[in-house]
Length: 434
Image 1: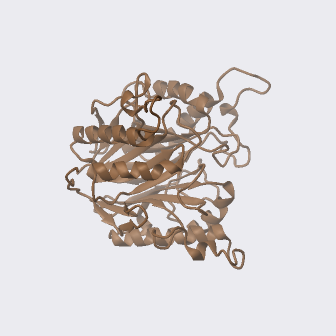
Image 2: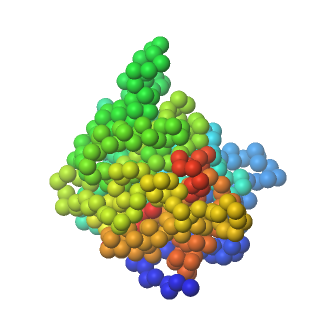
Image 3: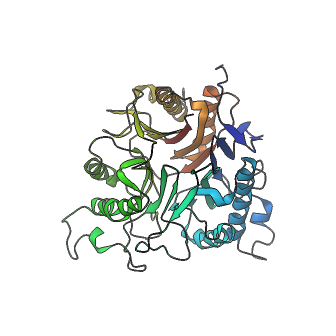
């Protein structure tokens, strides 16, 4: 058995889920940061969705089930932030997954009631499934404990308005860090759908690939101006999560990424969504961003742990001050699924594909962490993307082998595909690097 690693982070309100003996950390305090990951409409994390959320005997007798679910999530996250010595006014980023667009309005109503005019940069996408029966919403938040000049500053450019029902800030600065909301290639005028510059010309079957048009528009017209308003720029992006709905878009998107980031790319994770996946039904892509200010003292450091990235030319990880952002990890090499993660087709029941892949992922993650001067034990946000959520528990068992006794800040959602044949899990990992 592996010796228990010493962590520099503190789990907040940790629980042991009896079935499976799963150690879950609803939150993590890491220096001046608070992370809340994988929040669901559960009252105790131990017994599934809260009965008062589902109300199986009278589901329509009061407020809508989705509003009750969102309110329970906000109660849970408020307790996490309080346990970490912070509060909900100092959230700097919030991410939401839903299984259906019908969840969004009730969630937004609950969010405005709690956060009022302090809604930070936000990303909302649709996914295929969650861990709990009856669950339709999952939320992740990042917050800070203000110290001196390290305070949240909301940035709301007048020429980049957000619809009132959402109400979030397009960008937010905290010290040298800049958080930009998830951006799509929608028109600047609400109700017009995709921007004209992000569409194929009317009546044309080609003259541009739709994914390239949308991705280029997002970077030029949405992300770059938001960064500029916060005192940052594309060259100082340190982390991106890129959500895409179509498998055939991944390779052409990578051509766009190489054009905008020809040298040191930010840590990047490409995440499949459901179809449709976004508030615009015909949108193909949404990108959220973390960057550093151009004039700040915190500098971007590319980390090389000797690991083959999921996509050719991508950075393995970027260290930005006391945070390490690792690009999306899959058990791949230049030829595809690595041999160590392959199951012998002559003995198909003599191993677990997801466990073999998770072993590779966690070994690679530890190499990257060591190269950055930290440890996998300091993970503050673990997001797992499974093609089949029945793989979650065997994947968790691999975590327990690598980090025995640790409470993990995990989320697991089901995605419709991963873009490498045979790959069944992708890991998006954020680590504290004191």
